[in-house]
Length: 194
Image (cartoon, rainbow, N blue to C red; front, top):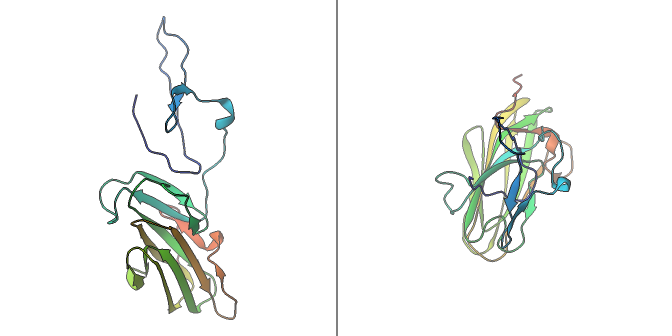
């Protein structure tokens, strides 16, 4: 039986059974933190498609976005705050990647609040970062964007204390608000060029 770390949220599961003569019924079992191994209750299983909008988030058990990620999931809104010891106990980092779909070309303002630190890159270029540990870091940056999909990467790390990550934008002629899922294309999804 293999072990795998799962953060909060939905995760894909594929179960296969090779039938041989004399084998019994397959059972799906899990062990919750501080719990016993038990059969997964039917209420914990349901069929739903993966999110088609958002950014692909990879969570690492360190502050440096290095090594194999603990888990990967699509995050529709980057307005996150985790309870203590979540998504992992101790320092962690997360990298959110995909594309930013721009319908209306012009000047865009992006604002990030990251406790402890964050960095925003668009089109492969770091636009801004604030990486001072053990405090809430904020930054705002303006950039000109053409219509079409732009590669985006938002890096976050957490050393201790409070943790949160918020990602806002303001487009040409609009008000500030959270970057909506419909303009975020997860890494690996089909990008559009214009």
